[in-house]
Amino acid sequence: MMLSANYTVQDIAEFLQAELEGDSAIVLNGIGRIEEPNPGEILFVSGKQFFPFVESCTHNCILLSLSAPLQPKAHQAFIRVKNPHSAFASLISYFFPDQKKDPFISSNATIHPSAQIAMGATIMDGAIIGEGCSIGKGSIIHPHVVLGDNVVIGEDCLLYPHVVCYSNTKIGNRVIIHSGAVIGSDGFGYIEHADGSYEKIKHVGNVILEDDVEIGANTTIDRSVVNSTLISRGVKIDNLVHIAHNVSIGEYTAFAAQVGIAGSAKIGARNRFAGQVGTVGHLSTADGVIVFGQSGIAQSIEQSGIYFGSPAIERSKEMRRIFASQQLPEILRMVSSLEQRIKELEQALDNQKTS
Image (cartoon, rainbow, N blue to C red):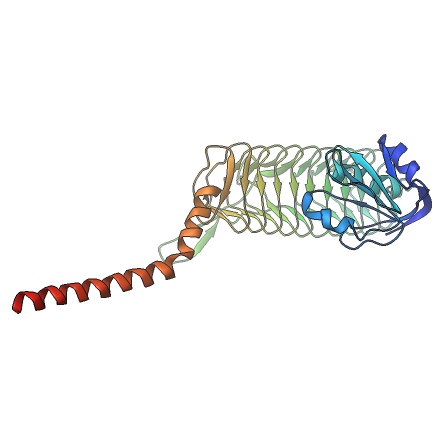
């Protein structure tokens, strides 16, 4: 991606407060990926698997770790930092800052007279703000966002187009909710009668999103039957995730796309769920749990660690099971061969007895 101005590698080193190695005359006009380098770009190397790509980089500034066993060649500049990925992210924010606009309230928004909009908040065209809502300073409500009655939004939040927050949703500070997300819809709760029909269980609770939460596009978080579905501070949720009613998610947990958390599950702090992980309801996980993609959590996880499989077990055990299952065809052939050999030996013994 092209930068708005040219920079020298010395400029970058000074910004990162890091040492420069190699060609200090390189002029930088873009930011890119080490796998697909273009001259004049800033790149980063996050691990040894990317070392081979460095050879083909020309007229580039490369961020790499302090311990990386590489030396710059002609027309290369190295900047060594403690965490190359983090330094690269800082540069992206530096080169492409958020575009600030003066706050305003659109005359084409529908805002209930009882709603409280703080000075410095922005409400764009087509937004609908219900009775008793409160929106904090610096928060931005994009077009066609719908806030039900008594929704509370803190300071410096960002709600993208077509976000829907049902009534009584409580949102902290610096929360980001991406387009199409639905916060506070009814949970999937019914009573099944003897004739097979269903009676809906009314949901009168709400959803709470604490500070610094980010919710991906088209994610849904259901309100609780009573009390609150809770998404704790610092949680990051990807697109197309479903959080059912009465769930509690611990601080700084992160879910990748298509994770599904069933009702009343209690997920610990600092959990990491890869794509398409699913849980049954009413279970819990310890703090510091990592679950590999497409795993199914069928019972509570009581110790931190890495889990995999369906049902999910400790990763090392599951990998051994997978490796063993891959040997089954050869084992079956071996067993068949042994059975045939035993039959031949038994037949030979019978022949000896009758002779």
